[in-house]
Length: 325
Image (cartoon, rainbow, N blue to C red):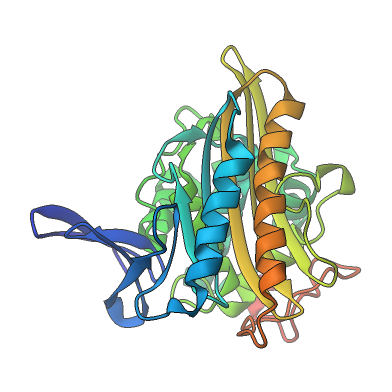
């Protein structure tokens, strides 16, 4: 599936990967299976919306809008937020198209591109690749990320971005993967691909990556997991990078289980300290977790692959295909 552009009502519209948010004639919506465009109804003034015709969750969307905005009120850093709840269909976007330096968050994309490459060749991951992937995601090891970035190569990583519909992402040049420009929109698109069946990443690839994201070192479990309810499995990748402008602090995560299935992305920069950026991310995350937990939906769709942290990152799903063994 490739990206294609067209014009509707004078606006350029990108036909993206399944679940990606886009605009049609000024209407916000998403592309679903088969390429159909589904409009999202605004939940009154705010940053969150529900699928058109699904007014049952309009009040929840309005509360999320209010609480996310309250969480960032008065913050001096620059920030972007994207949220998607698969149970209610609510989507939230705040500065979601603004570019940010990725720092280590791009490691989730590097691994996804590696897994896609192995899907296409049918070749197994080598023991070295498995070791590097584990270090890169669970410990955020930079040397491992550099090795895999160089192995997959910018061209193949870009091919993955095209397939995924991550059209706002600009890869870092000259080997500087941590300076890849990302947006909350595109990071949410990646999380949607990882957390539900799609033509880009197989169930096995998704389960493999989510399994590693569920096993990050405890010292790196800050960020969007803050305030997550008990019984929910957290899959997270964080990024942090200081430079002359301040600290870049980013966090992306998927939260599944116990009737819940939602995604949170918070990107920040211009932070005076790492702690300040983490506080911004976690204030947003706590608001989202609290509001979605309070909704207590009676039922929720399940991931195609059941993922839970286990003793081995390679034993995520049964009967792994050859390219993951």
